[in-house]
Length: 115
Length: 115
Image (cartoon, rainbow over all chains, first blue to last red; front, top):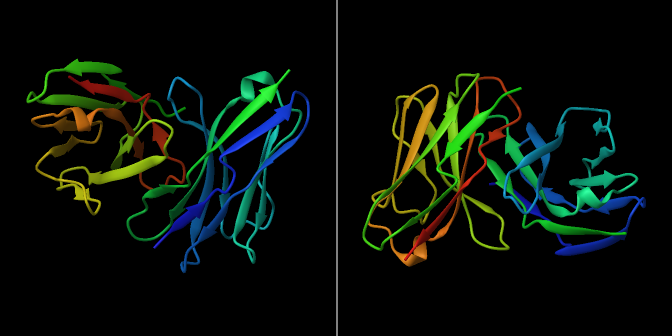
């Protein structure tokens, strides 16, 4: 079974500051992928970043980076130099490489960027 | 990049009627499609996984006779909400992947309101 936990229901950050969104996961499988998606008020799911369980380097995509700590089973998203357009819901998700390969989501964190 | 088209984007129907939502992969062959349901201010809950040419696998608690999923081709999957009731009102969103892909691509979602 897979489980994703996001413990921050809401986060408020000043524009241009960095923000870390927390995510922990639980699985007994060794092969899995971790994802972060952004969901603005329109409802679309925007893929931000991916980290494979065997990747030794932390993933980075522009202003997004994933702080992957395998031993602690955490996959926090770091957004540098936040912008007003970053205000949205953020979901952490996990997908096993073997088996059903379904994507399981955490509860989400609502990020609000203040000017 | 991979694009998934989902329509209708919103639909209003009377209680007791059936509604069909389509999900199409426009530039790739979707070997697997996933259907999610999202209530306001909540996370995405997986309803079912469908593989082209085979029956969908439903998550525990999801009524397969109420939520009919068909994945007849590598580019099209449909979700039919049969005999819809107000409690079926929700945001339904599909996602698709192809063989070997890590990242799922999501449709824009369909907002269903049952009166």
